[in-house]
Amino acid sequence: MTRDTGRRAAAVEALWRRDALGTRLLAPAGWLYAAGTWVRNGLYDLGLARAHALGLPAVSVGNLSVGGTGKTPISAWVAQWFEAKGLRPGILLRGYGDDEPLVHRRLTPGAVVVAAADRVTGAAAARGEGAQVLVLDDAFQHRRARRDVDLVLLSADWRGSMRPLPAGPFREGLGALRRADGIIVTRKQADPDEADAVLRRARPHVGGDVAAIVHLAPGDLVAVAGASVVPRRPLADLRGARVLAISAIGDPAAYAGQLAALGAAVEAAAYPDHHAFTAEDAATLARRGAAVDVVVCTLKDAVKLEGRWPAQAPPLWYLSQAVRVERGGAELDALLGRSAAAGAP
Image 1 (cartoon, rainbow, N blue to C red):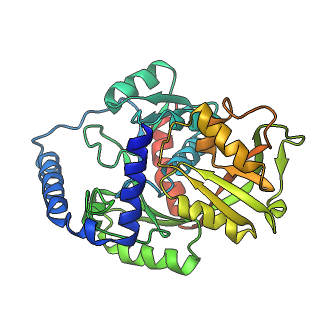
Image 2 (cartoon, rainbow, N blue to C red):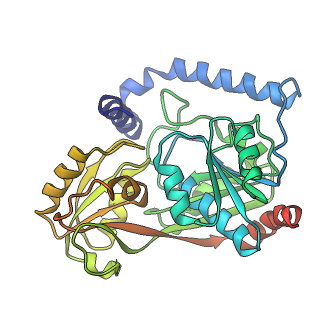
């Protein structure tokens, strides 16, 4: 993603969040997008377009919108769930953004990670490398790839337009959840009652039986680069600290809000999702970091910044994330267990 493209993407996202007049004027284009999606789904529903078997049990983790629901940490959590059952997972990505494969390799080192626009081709590569079960990151709309389980994520933190692209961030409406075997409502800043409200609104549309709530909670601070003397720091170190919060993710506001909730005085350095950090970006951020107490980024940013961060700059830390299932854990385990049984040797 170029810097100019990134600025445009960030501007559009800001308009979506405000549900600004400019995005509302795009409503007719959104209707056309929704109509095209409806026709495409109809071709698959009627069997006129064919879904291809992937040769292994497959779980898709997707959403209805673009960005910001926690697909990466939930996909990694699912892969780790299979690892705990003695299976080697293969994680299939679209191949958009070079940060995602690096993040998955960091979170699940034992997994086969394949980035390919065609998930069918990616599945063949993962099988060849020894995968026994597949996790498809961001594949709900990729209906060409047949899957055994469809998990759809909904964010309790989103505040903004609910319109279809390009008038809003939504690829599909709630009606598409009839294809889902289960939904997972994720929350970062949102409180449990807000997550419950999203769950109750979506639940009648879901084709399957699983309805879970997951808290994507802050973990601790992990050293990335710079002159750090300890590998990890507790979150308590953020209370009362001036923090430069670097992020190039789908929901930077929720990330900054999490840091503020921990007692930090946050100065945001937000970039568009999947921004490709340059050495110049890193140098600029390091200079800004010299004026604060702690410089923090996300893991998605850490894997891109660690090789560019100036050696004598203030330490760079990333905020780790804990996946805490608050509701529906037993049902989610049972659903994944069916795929685990099919993938067992």
